[in-house]
Length: 430
Image (cartoon, rainbow, N blue to C red; front, side, top):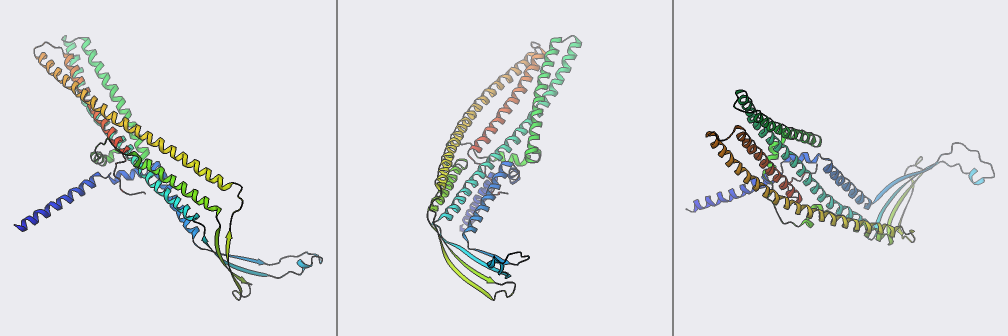
C-alpha cells in the first residue's frame, strides 16, 4: 500500500512540473517570430545604442586605469648656416636620441570618474527597458499584420463561396426570364448583388496584397511561411486585463533611469571644483643611438590640480543637465498620460466590440428565421425567387461581418497585451 501511495504521489508531482513547463513554453513568443522582430529598424537602433553604451563604459573604465606612454626626443643636424655672432647655437652640434617612459595614474578625484561610470550604467538600465518596450511593440505590429492577413484570407474564402451561390442564382434568374417565369427586374436585382460582392472582393484583395507587400518589406519574409508560429503566438496570449500600474512599465520606467544618469553626470561635474591628485613616474633613457639603457634617470612625483576660474563653464553644464532632467520628466508625464488614454480607449473598444457582436448575432438569428420562413413560403408558392436569393445573400454577408468583429476583437486583444508589455520574449538581443 505504501509503495502505491509513493508511486501515485511521484506521478502527481511529475505531472505538475510537466504541465507547468508546457504552459511556460507555450506562453513564450515563438523564437522564429522574435528573430524577425530583431530585424526591424526600431529594434536594431536600440541594440546599437546598447552596444555604444557598452563601449562607453569600457572607455570610462580604461580611463581609471594607470597609463604608460613612451616618447622620444632627438637632434640630428643636417645643414647649418649660422653666423658666429650666434655663439650659443653655433657651438651646439651634438647629435642625440633620448627616450622617456611615463607612468601616470589618478590617486583621487573625489568620485568624478565613478559618477560618469554610474551614469552610463543607469543609461544601460534605461536602454534595456527601452529594448523590451520596442520589442513588445514590434511583436504586436507583426501579429496585427499577420492576423489581419489571416482574416482577409478567410474573408476571401467566404466570398468565393458566396460567388458560387450568386453565380447559380444568376443562371437561374436568366433561365426563369427566358422561360417567361421570371422578370427582368429579378435578373437586375441578382446582378446588383453580384456587383456588391465584386466590390467587396476587390477591396479585400487590394488590402491583402498591400499587407503582403508591407510584411515582405519590413520582415523580409512571407507571412504565409509563419502561419503556424503566428497561430501559436495568438493562441497563447495572456488573458485580457483591466488594471495595470503603468508607472512600472518599461516604456515609462526607462525615464527614471535616464534621469538618474543625468543626475550622476551632474555630480561628476560638481566634483570638478575639487582638486584632482595624480602620481607619475618617468624613466629617461639617454643616447639610445649609442648605448641604449646605459645612461638613464628615474623621477617620480605627485600632481595636484585645482580649477580656480572656468569662465562659468561648470555652472552652465549643470544648468544644461537640470533642463534635460525637466525635459525627461515632462516626457515621462506625457508618455504616462498617453498610455493611460490608450488603455481606456482599448477597454472601451473591447466593450463596444462585445456589444456589436451581440447585435450582429441577434440580427443573424432573425435572418435565419426569415430564411426558414421564405423556404416554407416557397414550398407553398407564396414567395418569389429573389426573396430567397436576398435572404441567403444577407445571411452570408452577416456571417462575414461577424467574422470581422471577432477578428477586430483579436486586434484589440493584441493591443491590450502590447500596452501591458505582456508578450513573453526570449532574452535575445541580436
